[in-house]
Image 1 (tube, rainbow, N blue to C red):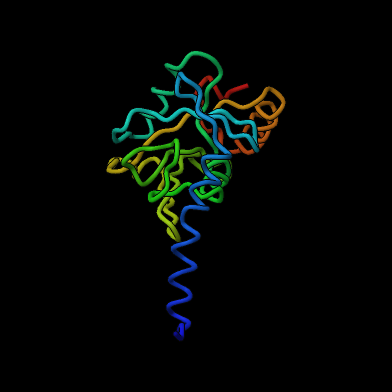
Image 2: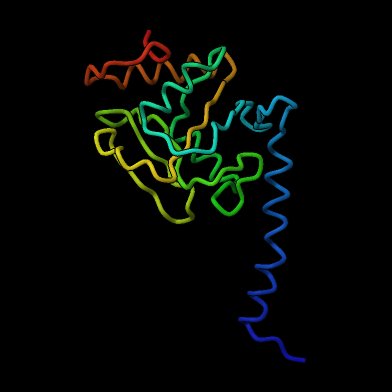
Length: 170
């Protein structure tokens, strides 16, 4: 029996899918109250209700959480994506959306939509956020040292006098 290159590629692809899913389940640990711990970064994640969110609604949901939860940065979401989390393999971040709100410290208005569609990034600013189809919200809680670094970086990038909401102001 002779195997063609195409057949070998298909076999390798099929065999690799469960490995990707296993790496997600090994890296992320879900507590009984639904908080997801990233064992590599020590960040704690919470997935918002599975519904469409505007930027303002996402901020409000996070502000209503008890404790020091905040909106994730696009780099923290990129880290999830690089770990294998996408719309086909949400793992413990299960939802029916395609995008997640984040803050972008390099942007004029700081809002950002991160796409979990493989090989597809969407950059929308807040004033164009009226179409909320498929946009979800995650909250992240970081260890105190990392949180101070994120907040310090965030304040340094706020050169445009953007009105920061209380969680990020300092």
